[in-house]
Image 1: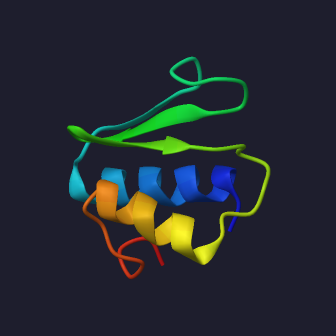
Image 2: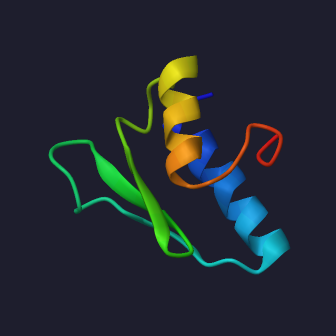
Length: 71
């Protein structure tokens, strides 16, 4: 899964659960940005590159989500 797909899946989950989701590209250096899920947030690297398993799980932990939530 790449960064854009991750954002899309989190937004879909937010819509289903009534949780606000937003992405702010200017909250990071270069291609980094910040993805907010309610009051939680994670930093997202380049949105066009693949997210490896370890980073994906770390980002989900920061948002207090599981892989099943966005599948």
